[in-house]
Image (tube, rainbow, N blue to C red):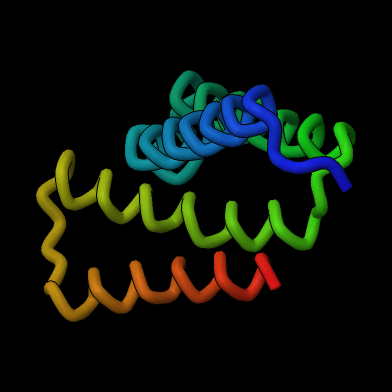
Length: 110
């Protein structure tokens, strides 16, 4: 298993950004009834998953990549919701989410 190379890290960040963009189009899609936001959301998610597949094809351990992605992307989506849409979040909830991400990273590193 190769270590995470710079191109893999860049693709991971790109994947996370594309998935976050896909999430950001969901409100505008009105439950997938508005064609253009629905298409934009689907293409962003597809691009994000494509980049994850390319990282895995390069030899990065799926047992590390998928848990990291599963923790990182939702945390970014929550931060996006708080900053862009003004959704409320308590400090306790934020601390628990960050702790969960840290635990996932620790578990995947061992």
